[in-house]
Image 1 (cartoon, helix red, strand yellow):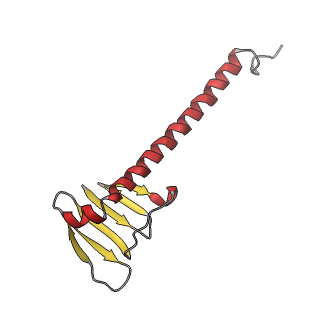
Image 2: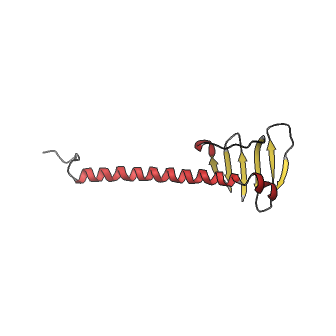
Image 3: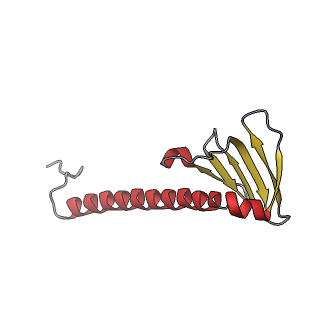
Amino acid sequence: MRITAVTQDQLIVIDGVPAFLGHIGGYAMRQGEWAVDFNTLTGLGHIEYTDNRPNQVIDSTVFNAAYAWLIDEHQRYVTAMAEQHAAEEAARNEQQQNLIDTESDGSGVSSNDDV
């Protein structure tokens, strides 16, 4: 799995799937991280900082101890978006059903009422 998180953009990308965490409250990395990039297959990655510190190479031990929560944050976004889309779909279905019910009970206006 390839994980990239960019703090300023409030973006976490896992295997090419973006999660725009700023849309649902955001996230914070409190050690001055600009970005974290990690590959679970190789067990290697790096951290880029917002200050003058050089990039730091990290391994699985460091990632799992300090940054594995990024995976949970990504999932939080994916779940929130799925729930939002489901709610929107339910609302559309309800509106369509209300239109059908209105038309079938005779209270709707028909274009064939030219008597």
